[in-house]
Image 1 (cartoon, rainbow, N blue to C red):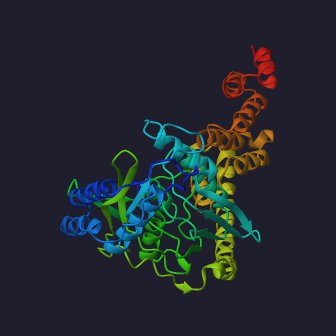
Image 2 (cartoon, rainbow, N blue to C red):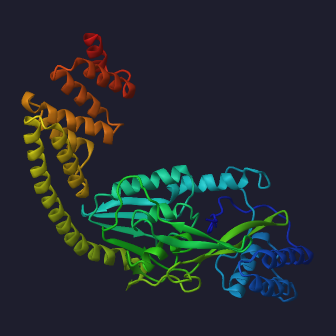
Image 3 (cartoon, one colour):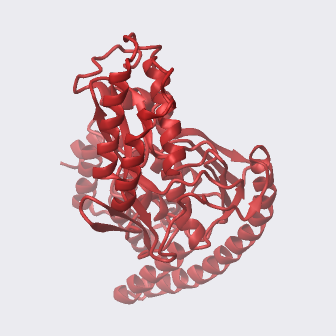
Length: 451
């Protein structure tokens, strides 16, 4: 997916340059005109707008604008009005506060790096509202490993919420590459998402939800998306699929309306321009949100959107919590019957039947999201007496299979084998403890003792 928009805030004060002369401005407008003709996402409109842009220098639009930065801002305003495309963006190239070479290869990477640091990779706030409602204020979409890790941590944080609010009111876009991953938490697999048509390749790239995600999907959690007049580009890309699939309730004001993706081109030695070269295409609607924006389900002033969403989320969370509790209660009752029957089979030395029932009990528990490493270990502890040790050992072995990075599982399993008199297997598990914790004093002592 192309870079949707990266209109970096300028990090430095004015760049010292000589004033622009008429010939300078004429040359710059001519280059912009040619670039629009060659690259604008709609070739016919690109040709039309390119010709209209070339005539601008003959008008008085820029006659008295000679300061470079002011000229860039004026040109941007004229281009956006002429083409009715908010992704058109012409700017003066400026260094960040680090003072890197504006013409050097590190200029854009450094600006992007500094912006990411300042904005915490887009995560402005992550919080709980009245314990039940998870809240994420996300202000720019980034595309690199650090950003992905932070977002995955955020989604882990939100995974126990009974309602979720994602605030995009101040999100003006960024890179769209992580959008399929994020949507995979809220939409089932496989779901075809909004794709991207590229003019230069004359092809559409399809995007789908992913088959697997880290942690658990949040397919049924009530979801509320806050949008407003500053919600733009990649933020709209993310929101549009949720809107079309009726997966979320949208609260606030209509978004800005930018469904194009851009490429960055140099214009002379001191300027550069973002030109839309691709457009969003949704498989359900066959279109996108360009020019119209995304219309909220609950229309309120942007500054009131969060309070309104919280009121809605409270009620939704109450209902969702009731459903979860009912599901858990039913799972616990069913799981207990399966465990009791498995214990009976172990006593009768009917191992295959016992293990089959234990597998079924884990499926039951997993469907209610009960199963984690600590849950299994506490359950195994219940069966830790000599007459029930087979149940305990099976459960702890299952723990190490499902959670191979959990040190406590190997420690508990090693002691279970030790207490059952299976010294060789105990040594194997203590050895695995040392693979995860090479200075574990208990494992070192027990391995020495068991030699």
